Image 1 (spheres, rainbow, N blue to C red):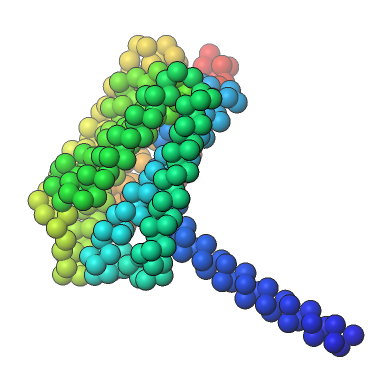
Image 2 (tube, rainbow, N blue to C red):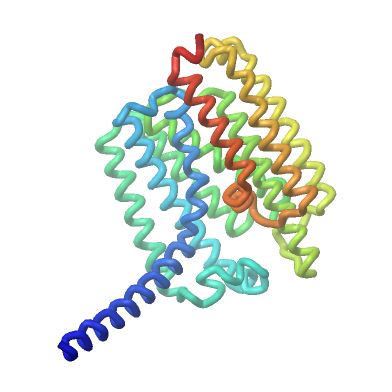
Length: 323
């Protein structure tokens, strides 16, 4: 019995070590892919959600397909970006913790993962071409444009002020268009405008955070040339104002109220509060984190977004609420 218990103890210990090593390896792998950034690709679901077709199984799975393809393409860009910025990332207080910059993952292994991701993504696109509807060539074109645009961003355009944040904003618009093309759902000009402005706010907020970090550490980067905190504050305030005004104009459009009901106007309360809270976090409390991290951590913004989504669920799917 003692011998048997000894064997069980040894096996359990070995298994625990294996599990710990596997968990650590997976964490490095997920950090390399920047899985936490995949939340941005949820924008591909917006056409499905706002069209009122979220309950249609075939369209839902097509949107899931778009999400996966976009996420893998984005991870390819992240790996390429980290590979090209290893030396500069090692000098950054936060980015030096990234797998490639820290040495947790080797360059060779990162290139192997990159190759696998490209093959898988292309395979998924070809599968979609053969099994989905005729608009798939438009979806594939969007993915190619996104990939090439971000390659240009990684190697050159991220160092060109204003163009860099514009490219980030266009990337979000491409996500929405991809969701529309893969499902065959029409994308309105309002959807494109609101997506672009929202993404511009997030991009400018991220640049401001990087400027604050540069002031604290005393180390700047080429990508911040053409920016200073004063300019970032003004540009951010203008963008937030434009976003709120555009949303208000959207809610009072006759065709919008005909589709969603006149009560859609009152959803502006959530939008204004969320933007004000974001500005407070950025300008008052000087949060230097990326906008994505702020959204992940700030309970006020999270609760407001949940309320906004719930109100649209009622407007779109509950006909009694509209009456």
